Length: 71
Image (cartoon, rainbow, N blue to C red; front, side, top):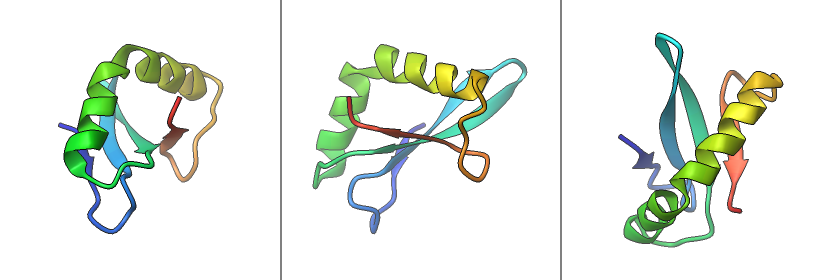
């Protein structure tokens, strides 16, 4: 389940299924409310996951986390 960190300015953390495991991903947004950020993630989930999988495959991780920003 995606979640927002209250002090992070709209950063949503979610997990991407990767084989038998899960890969943590972090999406930075400019939204001020959790509802807006979740709506954005839901509407753009397919594209955000595609980018996350691409970055994971190429090894683009920061401290073991796939870091993403808004499209």
